[in-house]
Length: 109
Image (cartoon, rainbow, N blue to C red; front, side, top):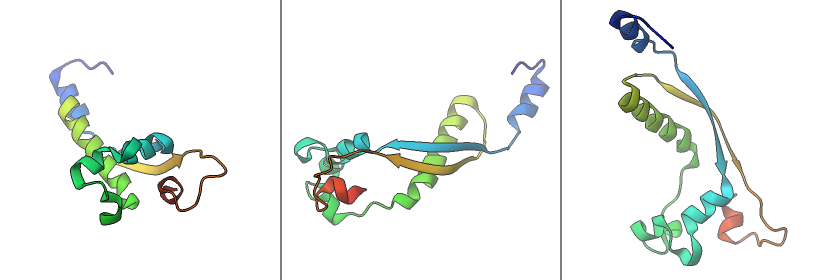
């Protein structure tokens, strides 16, 4: 958007209409990011090899966490204080039909 004069730019920066977002999560990528190969993942490095038994991920907090992160990034990069409303979070993945239900991958989904 092109604005003339600093007053119009300032007025635009005061708009507080929320940005709306939908999040699509690649479940296969997420699985390998969390569990890695040979359990050498980021959470394992931070919390030990059995992190998934000691900690429980609260997936319901993901939309709020993403909203706050996006709001902070927009504020830093553009100087705008706009709320971000994550309307929907969708995870998609695929796995082999013979994947056992007790595996980390099957339990995750």
